[in-house]
Length: 422
Image 1 (tube, rainbow, N blue to C red):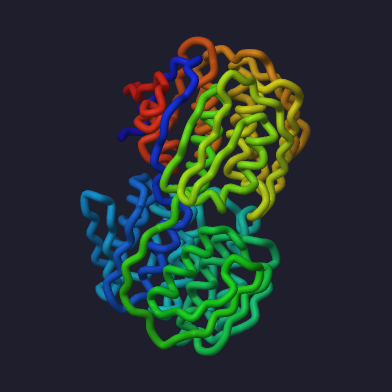
Image 2 (image 1 turned 30 degrees about the vertical axis):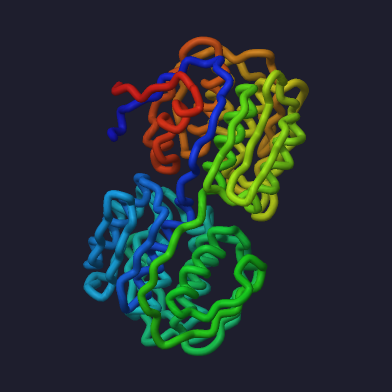
């Protein structure tokens, strides 16, 4: 995989068939960071083969952890060999989730030096919540030379009220608290399934955690955590993306190895768009054969509401839907870059602050487009699947950060897509 590959898509083929969903990136990364807390080997299965996972393995290896990856992407981490407690800028800048080693390192080793994520003032994305929470647990923290430097003999339980809902903040503080002395209560905690998955992983190592999945998590600190074997939950955003691919192309797609109960907000919108949706224990099917989607209104908000990571995909759906759809993004500023690229394909989109008003057109036309971030790039692939002619999506290293083998899975569904060197 190189940074100069691009995807070529010949649009106009209704997708048909079934595809297997990979493990969730956003659960894998905190779980791998959490392996630092264990005093025995940890084996993590159902890991997606993604750039961010490779970066995390590199980060743990750089600290001295013994990490082995088998051909099925099962990862074993033995943190007893860790001798270096820093996460350097060159790794953190490529992956903001590196901040997740901060809590485990302080809790287990009493020290951490973690680079601030690149290009982000403290505040824009709430690193300050991580810092304030760890200080409340008794860590001594300074920020110097672009690094968060944290020191603590042993953390002490505390009541933490998070100022805004933050997934990585909740995860970092939960990991720090599992080895703290006494009880920690996290209020206004994030409720995402990935937070619950991390809690279940920690519990399997002997942690005492109650209430994950609600907005109040109670953690009773323990002296030590032991090794475990754990399977990561399926990726709900990858799930949603393939379901939208089925709907936007007027196709019939079944995803398997997924968790339908994590997709409620997305499935409701697919039904509003006119798709027939069926679910089983581990599968979801969407059928839009012979129909043009109807425009839907979307407003992003923290789980269990509509996920910001599915906003771009529904924007793509709205570009070819009948009617007018409004998309309101409340989580991240400047998350509309993909809208400008879709306009080049003939989409009619008006932007007003954090709102996009999309008038559906009967067809998009192929154009060279550029991926700007992970989810935006997926939406350009979706647009390419319905555009007339051959669309080329550049800078697809963004896609490779979050979607395992996207062109292979789309090929399974009958798409005309290939990865070509630049």
